Length: 461
Image (tube, rainbow, N blue to C red; front, side, top):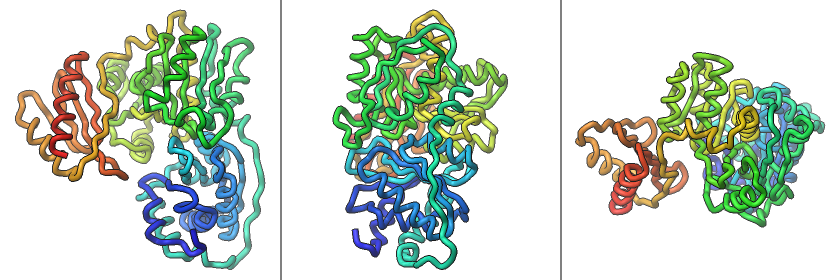
């Protein structure tokens, strides 16, 4: 990439919630430097905290971002290697805006930037990211020389404080557990040892998998929402007789569970479990769930005396609704879990600790602990490439709207609900895809609605 940034490329890499692109053709140090300066100017930051993941390009881009930020007059606190939730902790703990260099679960050729305001408040396209994009695209930050006092760069290690804060929110006490953790060569290999070594003596026997930090992902993609990336973890849980398996994505802000039988646990089930724990601490509290989460979640929340609130998919919607309702917890079916006591930010490690704490308190296996929270079979997310998303959605609505007992809504794409089943079809923000999630009262019902809707999508698409 040349020193003069291509406006079309800048527009392409700024997504709805973050920056994401390939290195070095879309993202490089010059881009990071310009973004650092623009970010400081847009949010009016006097200090910015910066962290980065284990990808080969991340350290130099984080340093370049710091150069841009200091040129704009802000001081920079570099925390070095970090998970995304560790960066959110630093932003909340220090009370300053933050920048995390990561491409999360994307393949090795990608990198990106996740930005937040002070106290981990989200920065999305409607809350500042669009302004940063426009300023970077104008070329002004890249070309402008320092026109005032420049800031300083200091280093600060927040890993221990991060681990202690998480354990204060979800202490693990009770029976000894054998826990397999698949870090996928991502940042959980950095944070998990710091967290687990602070548990009580003998509380957890840790079986580490792929803890070596390696942004080329030599074993499997660090994307645990894809079942094939959980196979090594499932096998190791069964081979070692472990109580539970934990899988994290590349920047460790998402967590997925495998039970003692090697079964993948739905994120909706973990959402329901954590919701029950939070409601036990704060009866009557509000719990957020997105619209593709299992209907078991709002049912259970209501049964426990809480208030379930449904939102669109996406962290900015979850966090905004949490702030509006003072919700104590929010869960997404994608494996993101948000906590009011963690600045309403998402933390895969904190979700994992809640699961371990609940399991350690009872003398039953994980599958039995979770059984009350697993009410309905779900399809998982199924993607279809389509040419005209709006036309396919209109066809689906016309096909279902007249059926007896059917209700539809458009909170995010198209949701069609019946007493015995429900499905949501929503368009991707970045690709010509429609994403289907279906659920039924039993496996045959779910499979029937899944297959019928999928056939319609692919015939029309």
